[in-house]
Amino acid sequence: MLTTMNEVLKIAEARNIAVGAFDTPNLENMFAVVKTAEKYNVPVILMYIPLLEDVAPVEFMAPVMVAVARNAKVPVAVHLDHCSDLECLKRCLELGFTSVMYDGSELSYEENVRNTKIAVEYARRYGADVEAEIGIMGGREAGGANVGSIKPEDMYTDPEDAKRFVEETKIDALAASFGTAHGFYTVAPKLDFARIEKIKSLVKIPLVMHGGSGVNAEDYVKAIHCGIRKINYYSYMGKAGVDGVKSCLEKHNGEVAFYHEIAAAATEKMQENVEKAIRTFSMQS
Ligand SMILES: [Zn+2]
Image 1: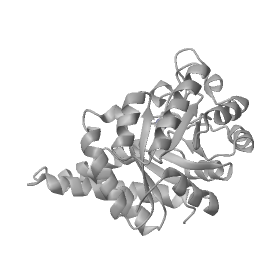
Image 2: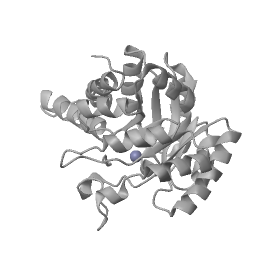
Image 3: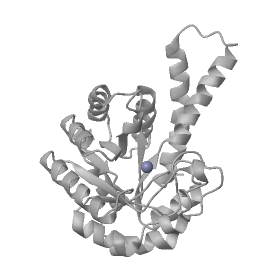
């Protein structure tokens, strides 16, 4: 059933688990995620990422994501991931997203607050929830949270800033930077758990881990105990899909008659990958 991010995170809080939030730029991703969530009876979040607008235009994706969520047997929120354009954010709310992430992490603190407040005002008109970010996550291709000459520690979320940011903006969930990064890890990330605990003690809303795929199971569990309630996940699921395609082609010596056979093989591998993630996030062994 279609629901909001807040409803899903409330369940996570009550069960002391994290909800998996998966970027789903195609149907194969969506099915892999929703089927797995139903199998383990956990709520889940489908996310649209504007970065992939060229391959998956939001006008077409939003109605499909909403329909998949409505038909699911578990609560599913439909979320806009990393949006730094307020007009795009507004368009996605009109299209039925039940939550949005406004990402002003690269702006000054004041500008980030100002725009996040506008995002909150828009979202409230649609009964939708808002996630926002403070601190810089960065990409893994730069060796973890490392942009230019800035040291990773300097990009981590400052707990006092986080407290002030949440009070000023009235957001529903906070993306905090504490050692994870986007993309594929070339070196294992070192997570600053003490920072997460500190932020959690000051901020009374659910915390979000970005760059979630590729983190080891033990670290996920520790992060969840420190207060992470939403884990954003994509890269390694996407890679699993590619592995599925490769083994399907190898198995048939490159002779596959129909594209849907390849898509089904990709879905199967992604489902295996999502299954591992969801079991860890929801503490099911
Ligand atoms: Zn992210």
